[in-house]
Amino acid sequence: MNLIEEILFITGMAMMPYGIYEILKGNGTKGVKALLAGISIGLFFVELILTR
Image 1 (cartoon, helix red, strand yellow):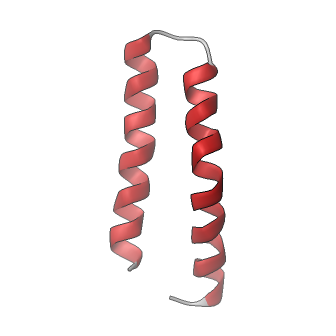
Image 2: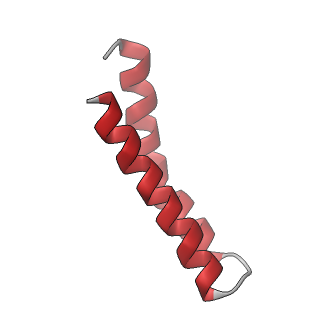
């Protein structure tokens, strides 16, 4: 993994909890919030697996 990818990965890891917090804080039904949070976490783990 090159330096730019490593910096972007670390930035994404640091920002993910805030993104999940914003999803859960926002307007919408619990089902939609859970779906968006699940997709976000799932995509993060896919990225983690593909870049390592």
